Image (tube, rainbow, N blue to C red; front, top):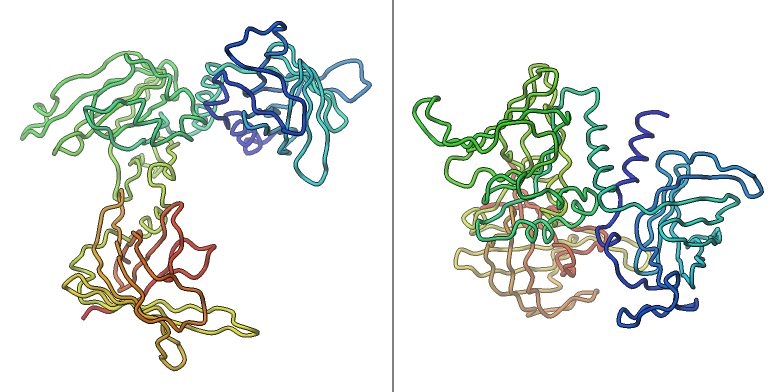
Length: 457
């Protein structure tokens, strides 16, 4: 099996939800008989209270009618969710399922056009089912087993590379905030797919404020030295204290860069073969974990961060291309335009949105015909630049004063949008935030951002 295929399988292994490992009442298919699972009632039959919700690994597979089970391929598994849904992955195929249980009888089927049934019995943590002409045995995994698998997968990704560690950036924590609460609120998907992160004991958590980094050394026999630094005229005086020194091959959490001295932490990894790697935890200009390169131009670490959770609006790619924060002074006394086309009848009709931002904080947006400059709608009100995580925002509070547009437009625009500027051009990206309704300045419901072209003065 190729490494790419193996990687896919292992990624499937760690794709789970923390909630799956918690005990709770199963929500079954409403079309199937239900089993009373009131926690206040003692069950008369323990099997009837079996809760299949969780993550399973396939340990045996055989064709229907065969006498012996064969070892299942690596990566085959089953995830059963509390909402009556499940996911089964076999031989690089993935199927969405619905399921129900009555006593120890487990039934369900696929949600696609194939309508393949799945049926079997649940005995403790062992599920035996028949599906698509084969008989399968699944064993439920504990949270600790899933955590160990996730760590093993990361170490597998580091094999054959100069990378001595894997690291995930989880954002910022204040001194008075609870670390587990911060991580759970900000990065639930990371904690689901990498359950070991939330299981790191207190003795492997260093620091109380700053940028949060979860670190997994490649070598379980790694020796780690963590030093807290301070700004000093002499190199010898820069070490403020040593937070840890010794063997530390298990995952640990490090909080760094809490003050004015940006790079205030130094980490030295020394593996069992004597190879040494020096790392200063920090973020780069794109607010992602900075991982330096060795003399051959290869990264010394592997980033497994979930940036879509930390920065949920999805504009990191723009920032990676150099787009940056917008200051109010950059927008003052400017006019910005966006060209678009819509289908009306049997033809495309072209329009422009024109947005004028004045120094006194007032704003006017017009919907104009691109052909003859006819004004179809006008909005008047106020504007200001706000802060949205690492992005700047454009807050608009506008009322429609004229509307003869051949399309439905709202009476008000009272939204706050992500707004970034191009590095060397008079261009803006204005985008909606997650879950935000589109306004008239966005016409494509499949798009979350629009490029506007402007001029100052």
